[in-house]
Picture 1 (spheres, rainbow, N blue to C red):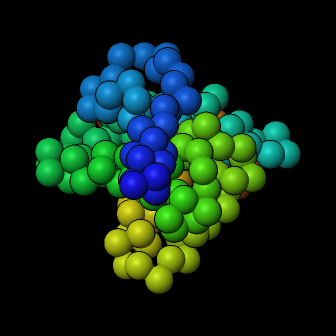
Picture 2: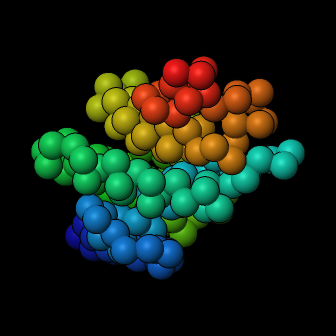
Length: 165
């Protein structure tokens, strides 16, 4: 009985909330806070690179989710909610707190656990979440100079005017 009550308590731990700097299209404020914590763990910014919060990665993913099939967006939101859950964290990672309320080191270990898990569902969830976060991060023009990328080639009228056409 004590274990059951304790498990319920862990499952009800609060998300470390943070406000979105712009209106959300698909995510709730809670889901935004979870995704922002995941994104800042995956893309912390180093050696001059901006971090995920500066680039508004969670907002960019929110906009992308708005363009997906509602079922795909719902599965993505379920994945980040599972990653956040303290009871899931305790059972699978030995973590007593929600993901968003954990330290950066604990978050990094948690995501590594999802990435390398023996459970296919966890690996797929990690792949989907990290893929969208990384895509949103590395597609921002502010990181292009750090990897020597000049940006996409001009298309349409811009390409014709650039090449004298």
